[in-house]
Length: 224
Length: 301
Image (cartoon, rainbow over all chains, first blue to last red; front, side):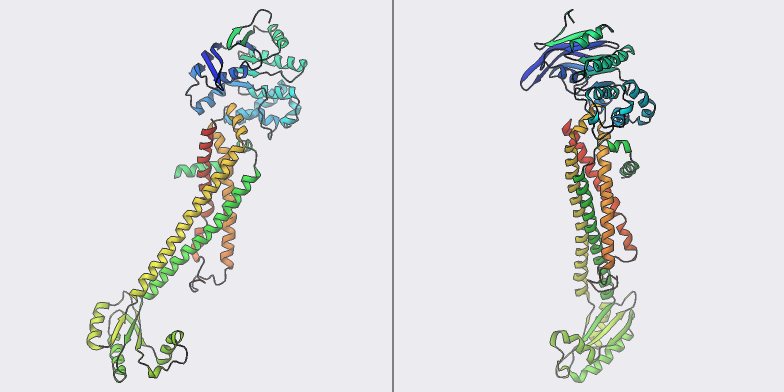
């Protein structure tokens, strides 16, 4: 579904990483770790077409992102649910409106009536549906972001530090949701520093851990 | 054009949820509404000016074309005979409805603005003037001049051509000026709305980024801005047009049959010309905002 082939990315005159290859197949579960500044967020952005590699190719559902028309990229992004580190909400809309936004932009707003109550219940935010995003706690925002990421029933879920600002109990709830999505056949890629989260996930699913360090991507050791 | 109209109608039908994705921005909203209202007000005046001068040109052309003046310069002892001969000749000329010799008082009245009221008319060699009113389709001026030369040697026919043509040409130029003003108003409004739209698009760069990340196409993003600016221009222009019409109605001597300045305004069916101003302003806003949105989205990609 998502394939990176010999990818390099340079930023500000320096090369962030190079010769990087990765395949996200249906039903796969990957963690991406590495020190701060190693390029984890950049790698995720390459995976959902927000950035184009300086060398190599990124193919999203068989189509390379280089030279992809903006409208074509928009349609591809509807198949990739992303939970951003800072959630990226529109603060003047309610939580429910934010969650339903992907359906609105896809011209499928009417479907929100059917999906939204169950989805909000699934992430435990029924009571917060009418509130504005700034009124939510960190964990609630992350769960709302996850609900928005999955409302289009995407093939791939990408999450950038989804448990960065929430407590252990809340991160376990979030992980449970992601594991449930993976069991439904969705490919999951999570960038995180949280080793406990990785260990907890490995107890539930066959997750692979990738480590981005020294401009290279490698499989993490058995200690994870 | 019909595609543009269909897009505008589709836009007016709207999508409330899509509209809500862009937060309202007070500054650009007020600027757009004020600009559209001011430009529509000016457009009403430019339209009234253009249509008034059009009416004036027609009236001058019509009135001066249907009248002529015969001037008889002769020694005093021959004046009465030449006047009689001229009147008889004019009475038998096809195409002349009426010919009337101006009496001394009327001649005095004509000269008073130039020489004052105490002009000793009887002591001056004032020519005899005969006012001619044409019939339709008019008389043969060349033939009449030939007959006058033979029968009334002191008569000179002035068919007003040398007055009428420059006046009508001047009125036509004024009318053109009115239409030019309308075009400039449209252009200025497009420029102002483009600036306001660009400002709104820049202020909402983060909203645009979020919408793109969740799969919004450019058309969806542009539409939210275009609809907002089109509707603002429509309401602003409707207000400005209404205000302009009200001012024209209360202008003193606004009747169409009054003199040149008093005739400034709209007459009868010409009021209908005001109706297209708000939709035209909306069309200008639609086109300007769509172009601005496309450029900005291209730049922000």
